[in-house]
Image 1 (cartoon, one colour):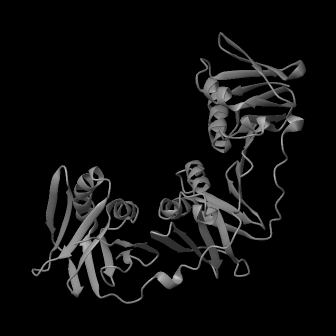
Image 2 (cartoon, one colour; image 1 turned 90 degrees about the vertical axis):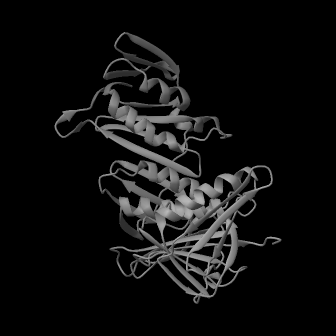
Image 3 (tube, one colour; image 1 turned 30 degrees about the vertical axis):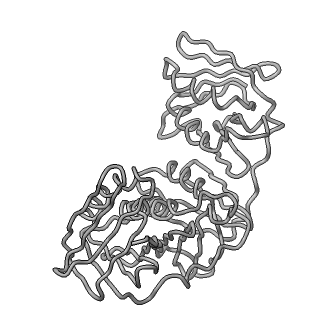
Length: 380
């Protein structure tokens, strides 16, 4: 195998596939990146068995020559070193040559590097997926939906299904739900999809979705999503991103969302973030994250937190709209901040059904997202 390739193109492809490399793999070959070279271009593959990422670099793109292939072939190169060294090479061109026993030589400018390659025949084959259920989603929308839900997954591996985000599709309405039993996030979107295409209980690891969102380009790229029995394939430009679907049935969360409220508030999102952020500083020091919210007779609200060692923060906040009963409630300020930082709207609706019932947070501008956090029971 022998070729010359533009460093920037190779580096971008390596950065994409390296997101599938796990430092904890027990299969030595999976600590490497597989390089396949043909006269059509270069294919890079990385996998940790849960996710696999493959990207293709064509010989030419927009009439620019990217790759010059002298001799096709394959090799697996150690990912950790390969990822770092390509970034640091001095010249814009990289020559790669593989000799006997997969000894690999990289040349760039005046730099010569020798690497110990592995046998590509030992590398696992990527899953084959039947493309019966395919939907296409705008990349910006997909990234937003992930951002607004993946933060609420559980980090507790004893309930693996809750470490993922639930996907359901029915009649062109795509819905994401995540929960860690203390909070819940949901986001819906209408997409252009064949009415025949529908699925339920597709649960994808939140960590995987966060890695996927880093690969989606900013410029309104469309993402093709293929849903099969135990795998999902995302096609983004020249990148194929395979993810395993988590085993198990996701719990029905619809019953915990209240439909009526005893107290309703509409607040300026930015002002509420700032106020809770200041209160969070003190509650974090006390390692409780507890912040209290209390309605006042003049229609405003009071936000407060205290620390036995540091003192107390109290501030008044004007309310744009207030309906219902007076209220005093305590909640996890970090959970509230996580929600407020992803809702992307000027004004926020917060609905309460009592001091010990779920708090519902929704943007006032649209009905496509809903967040829920459970309050804290406090002694006073």
